[in-house]
Length: 195
Image (cartoon, rainbow, N blue to C red; front, side, top):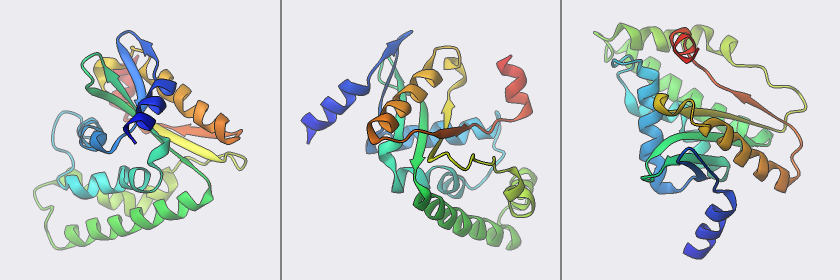
């Protein structure tokens, strides 16, 4: 098994500016959670319920289609970015199931007062319930796959995002998938810092 993992990593590994891309492994999960959670916090604890937040954003990809997740690591093998991908229509239903249950749990906790003192958490949940469906990017009808990615701010200009997308594209080509779309949800503040 270890030899298969090494071969898979060798095939997808590419270096640029001391950043490498390799397929996701189970031991990377905590690092992906850290990047996902902290990038959403914008420097302070905006969302109190870490587990439910991560269940909403990462669980569908890591539990159902981890073979389409790639990580970007620095020269010390520290994960500095990731791309979660998904292929096929079934994933949409799996994702919807997890995200619906997670949203119901969040809403229940909010109604019980568990998020009192965390107005940003409550606003986030109510926004997801009332307006969330409007904010989902529309995928082209012919897109058989989609992805989203997240890279630590210090590595935004390292080429990590491009390498992650290229690794995903190679897997899609191997599977004969000819179309995909990407999505990246960022705040206005993040967009301004990126310029």
